[in-house]
Image 1 (cartoon, one colour):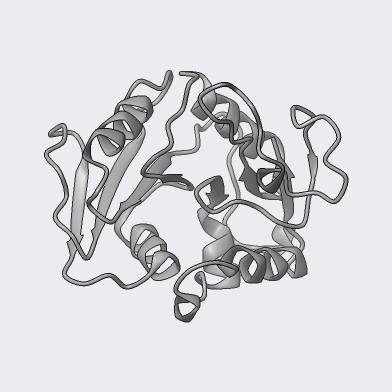
Image 2 (tube, one colour):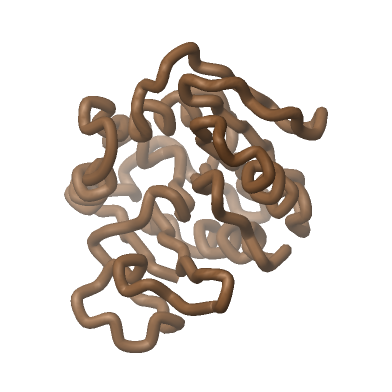
Length: 200
């Protein structure tokens, strides 16, 4: 279980946070918007990495790290590279066409992980431009109110936060999946090791 692991969050210390944005190179405006929404977060600085998965990375702020992978290695393997190339104790994954509308998101997420050692993954509520939540973005059987948080057994890879320790204990996303269902595999392994997954 998580309580048995050697890494222990120390009271009074702030968890460091990284954000990985994976792009295929056809959304320059959206990538810039995503990055700006991360850099605008309140509190401690967030390390930002943009990965060009088989494509050039568009020009970005000098404070943003970039990694250009020569050929598309698939979404799960691309996100695994993001874990390798960042240092945060919590890793945010943000699809290149998404952004954070609230500057308080990272502090909220950081506080959630600091308050609960068993919390391994947080899946974010995803809305469209009109504020509607798609049913497929609420990872529970009976959706009900999409603004209600709850423990779940699944998460959305393009809008989530994962404690780095979960990767160290459970292993990487299954890169050979290429696209889709890697979150299911990862979630089940995390649950098997005693971590909680929260839709928030």
